[in-house]
Amino acid sequence: ISGYAENLQMNPEHPKRDAYIRGIHSGVAYMNRTIEEILTLSKLEEHTTALTKVSVNLNEQLNTLLEKHSHLIEERNLHINASGTGSVTGDATLLGEALDNLLVNALTHSPEGSTVTITITDNCFTVSNPCETDLQGRINELRSPFVTGDKNRSDQKGSGLGLAIVQNIADLHSCKLELSSENQTFEARLLFPIRKK
Image (cartoon, rainbow, N blue to C red; front, side):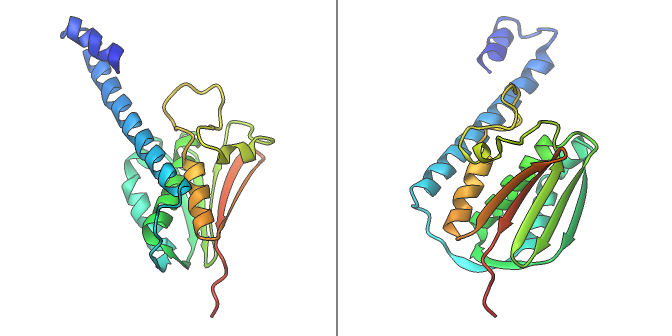
């Protein structure tokens, strides 16, 4: 960000002016996102977040998130294959954040033009996506803050905080976050306690 700004300051009509401006906007958005995630993770780890438990419709949450990220889906020409229905008990805001992180993780790391599959039941929210990076043997590391799927990645695809946030939200709800990687497919499952009827 500083480099782009300095170049524009020295030469406001720089031939790469538009690219520098896009870079500044992208960098600021990435930093804002990362700071928000750090603050969220800090609150969750300190258990200072009070839970307001209600019935949460997972399909409604998913539809809201798909609409929110429609630009990313279109930009990367991704296809969404969603099936099933389900409701769980929990804090709607925190669960929405957990599902958001799972979805964004899949949308961001799927190859362009591929399909993201989402399956919903009354006690499970599953997101699976094609993955070009071999994650076998590193799956459990992804739950730790600042760990990304690609150790060599230098772009701004993610901060490595998303799954750590999901893990903390899962712990607060007595849920289980299961991660797996097989045949170049990454899958994240959020398992909820079975509700008593």
